[in-house]
Length: 339
Image 1 (cartoon, one colour):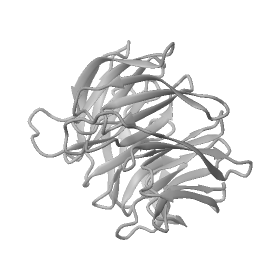
Image 2 (cartoon, helix red, strand yellow):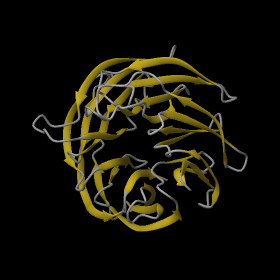
Image 3 (cartoon, rainbow, N blue to C red):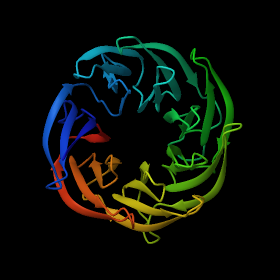
């Protein structure tokens, strides 16, 4: 069987835009890398249920989001002055796209038009105090996506906060809760447990995963556990990157940039306690992103600085990863999206 994977990239050196590569599950190999559309630094990708593709972009010195039809033809580009977002997500129910802008410390909202194109409609700017780390010079929104009950949740690396918002069908937005992490955590991304009552927050700056209880009555989070994603004997520089959870909610995966590894955690039956059971090399430098295949049988990691992908087989019972292919060329890849 062939599974298609989209790759978002930086275009600072050799990449030209959005690429596609195929995972052949019969031969267990990645093959046939091809450029599907030229784009400037499409560093994060998301698709709607209608198969429209939305990509981070830079255009004529401005930053924003591009929209593409299912045939990968450009529909429109919506930009504004300043740096582009670093994350993009689709809200199919409300026909909205959310973009988290790291450099500007804000969240941008775009309305999906009838033809799949976008129109800028609103933005949220964070002004709360920032953390003690050198990278927390101001607000740095890094993630903006939906909770299981369709609220908007935003991780801000600069303010050490997770913000929860109610979003009306009209696009009107109201803050309903704020979770304050330990100083210097640097909230980057989070994933929810299938039980919808727990989330796992990746702290980029202290290389940690926090287990958070989510209260759907008011949108608040409460910490239950916090663990490191690094081996105890590692003392080098590291930044947390991507975090994923298996469909059955039994295993959690987090990538380390610096240690250049994927940390594998077993999740207890209640979901409130995690334990590291494996730390496996990504066979490259700076694994900014990785993803599980649609059947959870494989993991593909993208190493940004060394321009390569690594393929792992995943054991459904133990959660452990086995490297089966490495050094697969992919220029400046920073987003892995199983299509």
